Length: 504
Image (cartoon, rainbow, N blue to C red; front, side):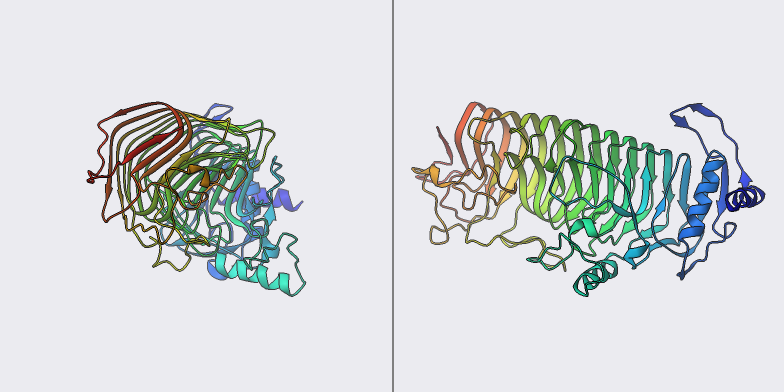
């Protein structure tokens, strides 16, 4: 009876804009538009609007779809679930504000093949198996992540709401206990544009097994708490991320794979500006299925603690046909990191056919995120400045890597008194086959610019490496690398020192 009355009420209030459906999978326009005032939402930032919002969504969905327009004001809510043909539009000055009460959040039933316990199923905005959904406008979605995470932490210690995976060492709730801003699973025809997204208790925008998505001109500021990724794309197909500005306390844009029988395929990331206390753009670390046909171009990276570009298969994933072009990274801890390992999975995966062209990176001597409140975790050993590693493992080479038009400026200032790996004993560099992948994972490395190991098929064209201060190490060291082609390799000319070492 309540449902019938809700639908009747919505029908009487809506301004109707009819449009025809082109096919079952393509929806043009909206059937109806209803404003926040018309559906009874309260924009005072105090009144909880969850039930009213959800009833409005359900009523529009029952009539074929429509738009909810949030006008200027602050709308407090817990989890809401978007459904087929629903558009959530936020006017300039409108804020959808996440509750700081963890009881107000719901989860999706998403299975995966990982036992890592690092993927939260909770979120402020949820959608599962929905088609033709949109979030747009010039407003803001704010998760109040710090207050929410601290509430979850306090409830755990009070014994009220126990987190079974609580991170005792790091003194914070596990990711699985903290809600994301947005989580969509098995959705198709998703269009999110224009809005500002900020302050999650966990990852920001998360997509799982989705198809045909466009993420355009988003302003993602996710620095409220730990594990604050910007955008995570898991085993999705036909995705374009363009014109987004991201400032995140963890990875900026991260492609993941949690499903052994699925893959990220046909993903384009372009014209984005990223600042991160981790890596700007990363494939991995979760890497169970595959990553294929990934195109990354025209990316600006600033003040980022880890890698501008990281490509990692450590759980059995097959990574192939990766094209990276025109990356301008300033004050960034590492230019590029490519790693094939075997942390988990039945067998090691593969990395092949990777092209990186037009990468420019300046690496500081000090940590690049020193001015941020949430800084990336430093290593616990003495070391000289790290080079950029491209490393497989014994018996499993990375294959067919092309580096062209590369310019990397490194700080130098290495000293043997800090750490030292002699070129006569490269076996001192550990293989770290089953460890978490990171460019610092091997400890001290014997070069200052690039370090290659277990690679078959490497082309280096117009690669320029600069060092701003003295460094006793060579610019490039290759160990167990086969089928190498170099053209226009520009390295510092140091009297009595060889700057390119290749050893088997």
